[in-house]
Every structure is written in structure tokens, then in C-alpha cells.
Length: 264
Ligand SMILES: O=P(O)(O)OC[C@H]1O[C@@H](O)[C@H](O)[C@@H](O)[C@@H]1O
Image (cartoon, rainbow, N blue to C red; front, side, top):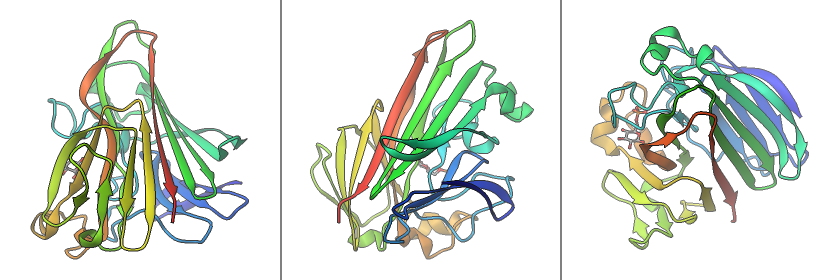
């Protein structure tokens, strides 16, 4: 079932699966704010200090990064998609569960931001919920007459319980046990295993080229106005990404998949 709701001042869409799984997506950024598995447990971190009025990017959940990753370029930091109001597209039931799609084109991007990246594009982000799995499918189409280059990421903030008790397995570097702050880019195997203080999750990607792993630690978190000082310990970001801009020819499209399954 799909219903309209609000989160703070932001209009949002709620997906509720027959098994009780639930996701809430703000139209601002097509930003996944909350994902609850059928047991009612929240799987994503969302900062209590995040702006929720469309004046700035939301801190937590799953920000959509497009067309620039971080400061890798002279455009808007982490791109314009997380700062634009998307539209609800198709929704319903499919093989992979109850789903809703969100759409954004160049015409939807606020003028000052659009001026910084003047290309014709169409984005479609689909969220599907079934049992303990969440599937995100991100599609980028070049609708213009010239090629453009873009980077992207699904900047997932996991509710880790306790960052310091979290481990990640599957990277060629071996098992990572977290401690000091980190902001690392790794080559992207298809699958990772994340163990938080109380859960085990499988993270799968297809189409992306890197995993970015980030936690600011206490000192850097204290400098962030949209994060409470203690919150750094509650989350870990693991982002399937395409950190460097790669070309997309006129008329071509690219699709990235990100599936998270709670295994225990
Ligand atoms: O504060 P922002 O713009 O949401 O970015 C958060 C972090 O996002 C991560 O993806 C980057 O690797 C970090 O360098 C960055 O600090």
C-alpha cells in the first residue's frame, strides 16, 4: 500500500508491505527517511538535528548523490538530486514486493542549481519492499542531444546500534572492525556483510564501481550543525557509488541496484 504522509514540513510517501515492512520517502531528494523490517525495527539512522524543511540536505537515511560525488568536481557538493523536489511515479506490487518510483528531470531542479549543471536528464529511483529486503534501483537517462558525465551514490546511513561494535566483511582488504573515524573508497565487490551490535545484513550492489565507507567520529561530528554530538556512534555509512564521473552518451541510460537484506 502507498500512502501520502509528512515528515517535519516535508511531504512524503509511505510504502507498507502486507508483511508489515515499511519505508518512508520524502519527495525532497526522493530521500528514504526510514525503513522498518516486518519486526518493526528501524534499519536506518536519521539525525534528530537534520533540517526537515527543504532548506538543506537531510542528514541520514539514503541521500541520492547525483551528478557529482562530494567535492570531486566544481559543481554542487554531492550533487543536486538531494536538494530537489522529486515527483511520485508508478507504484504497486511486483515480483520484488510493494514498490514506489520517484522521478526527477532537469526542469524539477531549482534554477540556481540547474544552471551549474545544464544537461537534460531523467532520473528514476525505485524502492521495493519485501520481507527483510529493500531493493533500490536507480536509473539515469540522458535525454539531451549531447553526452554528459556523472557520478552517483546511494549514501546509505545504517542504524548501527554502536559503530564501535560494527564489522564489515567482503572487501578485498578483509574484515574491518570499526574504531577511528574513516572516509574510505573501496573497489566494489557485489556483496558485503555488515554486522551491527544486534543484526546481520547483506548489502548487494550491481552497476556501481565503489563502496564508500564513512563515519565522521566524535571530533568531526561536533563540527556538523545537523548532527548531535553523540550521534556519530549510532551510524555507519556504506554507499554503493560511482565516485568518478563517467560518460553517458545522448539517449543512453545507466542503472545501479542496491539491495539490503537483513539476515539475522
Ligand atoms: O556532509 P555531506 O555533504 O552530507 O557529506 C557527508 C560525507 O559523505 C561521504 O560520502 C563522503 O565520503 C564524506 O567525505 C562526506 O563528509
